[in-house]
Length: 404
Image (cartoon, rainbow, N blue to C red; front, side):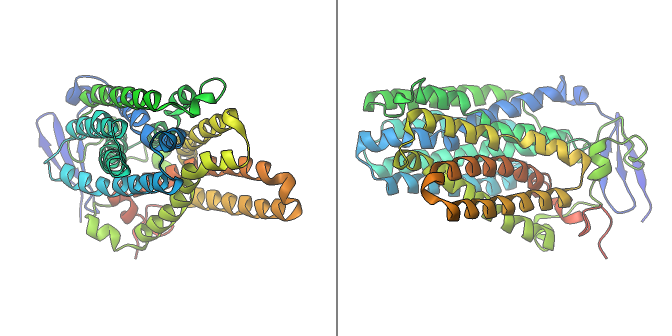
């Protein structure tokens, strides 16, 4: 198949020899009226606020348990169901967006309303655990999932030639955006972790309002580029000549794959399996950190520092994105998984040597290391996992060559 170019006013449709389509010739300002950097920062803000449902839950769960006499198991299941709804709603949000039924602006704004003032409002006024499940787990999960999938996806669309650290930066906001709120919840002394029923109700309502307003404002500035948009300054048929570092190590896909075609490739299956297992283990740590801190007698300050440290290290996805500029995803994933395995072996050796003396130390440092690795691992997976055609189009060696 030979390459073709069709002119359409101020842009042209370019099809390369493998069938990949590019829409070239338009600048972001021609489409948006402002820089694509505005979209990047808007997506980052929305991610910082939507991630509060996940990363502040551990700090408010104790106060909710005391206020409503809920058990640890009940609040744990609330978090578990939240993760389920947050994850699966992203599939349906993507389908609606691909079919043109829901654009990114309204997906973000609606998600902010659902997870913010509606979901958190119901949680704050709940009188039984089932209302909390509906408000936090169902509505909170659905709303935050809509925001998550919209923000990550739009950054990759606007930066197809250099999405590495930008995708990681926005993705990391999901975690470290919660740090100021965690500090507010914990207070300077850590005593605020045990808020009164009225205090926890007021806090949750205010956080829900902040989330809805902030995500709504960010959503106003978010708009998808035209389908197959490509930067004007890079020739799609000769991108190596004026390439970016990202493209040299992670070249564009050979052609577009449907979702079904993507899932029939081995790359997509293995990425999905390892991602689910890795994140499942990490989220388990998020859910149980507060009762762990209590059981170890770490005190409020240590608990707050631990929560904030989790969020900061898990937010180190921008650095993972920068690493992808210098290396291919396959090597990065190998590196992260080897580090994770080494960490677990060291942890076992420390426990075997002196369990009592190292009980706190053995958990604190490895958990922080795990979340640091998790942030970089998520970024390494994210570039391929969120862009189906790229995950499927590359050869097994990640080089961009066609698979035989």
